[in-house]
Length: 352
Picture 1 (spheres, one colour):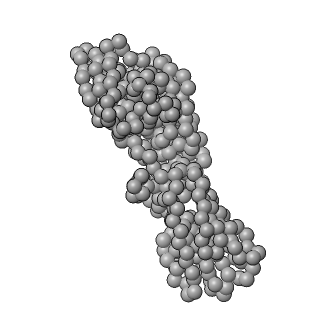
Picture 2 (cartoon, helix red, strand yellow):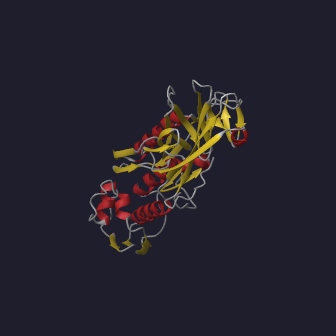
Picture 3 (tube, rainbow, N blue to C red):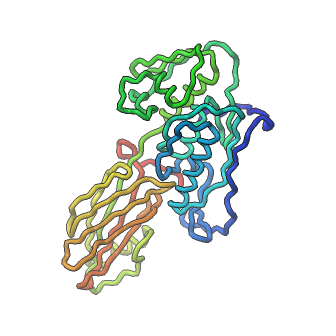
């Protein structure tokens, strides 16, 4: 989130963008997530920083309120795809912020809100389900500041990453930041220098730097197992869907069962495949909402066997399975456990 400011503009000066309230529903608790009576998962406002959108959201010349409305629609569409109950979110924005924004939100929903605020030269804080935006406070003195940024900072804030020689000031201006004539930006090695008398420009630079520094690209590590259950052996676990660790343990304890493990490290939505004992496994998964959605297909080498397909929305770190009984009476179970990891392949704890 962006830095909070202690005071906000009077509500009389705010133009509120409100998007309907969440429908009431009976809830129960499933593992560590509440679920609605219709089976949809219910998340909390504080989880929105881990809520990944279905697709990138391109803000092509939209003003602040219109950009927030488009982002909110993308959030609701992601909820529909991920089986989540959308929150009734509201956005309070000062009047007069119509500067065209030109960038693409590619990561979490709340990072998108913070990017819209920074590029609009606003500060934002969320209280409950409402995002409050305000113009930065402060005097008109000269601000001089240096920020240490990643070496690919310009690359990361530009929708044209192939242009590696793009001046940092131009990259900001293309995003929609119109600088005051007093503002000077310099970029040397991994240091971004700022000199300005405009508090809005200072807020835009600080906000964007904080977003880039806190943001990190996530990848998905898949732990996949195939289990061969001999003919004549019974197992009362689910045919497909989410499976508990207890049921997996029961599966492993069946006499004669054979387990084959195959890890996959992949970037979101990039397909991968590999040959393992008994056939070929193809996988394609990506982040969606608070979980991972995708498909794993196990093409069996055994004559007369059909592909086993594991498909659906799966919470981070939770196992989903599919199974099939073969013509000879044996049974194959394919289990897939997706986990969010950083660039070093260490698990990243996402709120659930």
